[in-house]
Length: 198
Image (cartoon, rainbow, N blue to C red; front, side):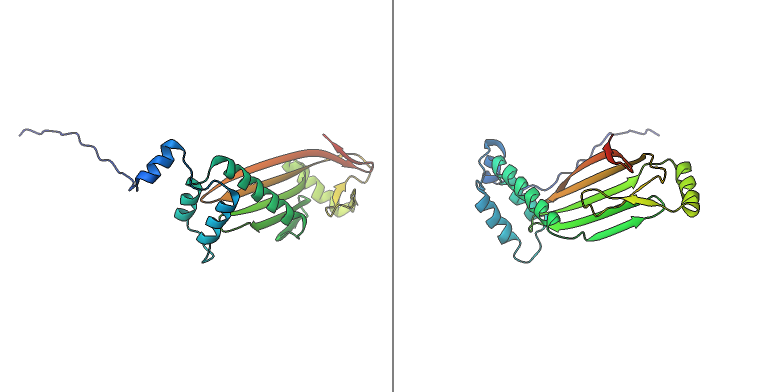
């Protein structure tokens, strides 16, 4: 008996719609949307049923001139900033064990974009330090401090010594079917004399 092995390969091709117009846009950089007004109109048209599909979003974004896209991203960020500064968080959580405060904002910009901002402030401790602080909290009550009218209260040691803390902000911006995440972290000390950057 003779066995013959014939190597084969299979390929999967995504179905593409290569019209002449799309071909020109892809290689000649001729964009159909060349101003913010045109982009807003396209978003409004696509959002008539309060739902822009991923395919529609991809189509719109592929037709936007890069400078207009940059302007649109700035518009999204400014809208989010205004919303966050003029509204209360959608979700507020506090964990007394870790002395951790979290605020979350959900912002719908338009049919194409939305954002999520998560702000966290918490004590910086190792797991053993956390257990010690729980025991200490039951024996010796907390003393709190706030500066500049802040809404968040920060724990510091009763003897006035410095307490290490950190603040994080995570901004997730969704545009069309994609998103970008930006994170920042700030470490500081809080004591009876105020807040000091580390």
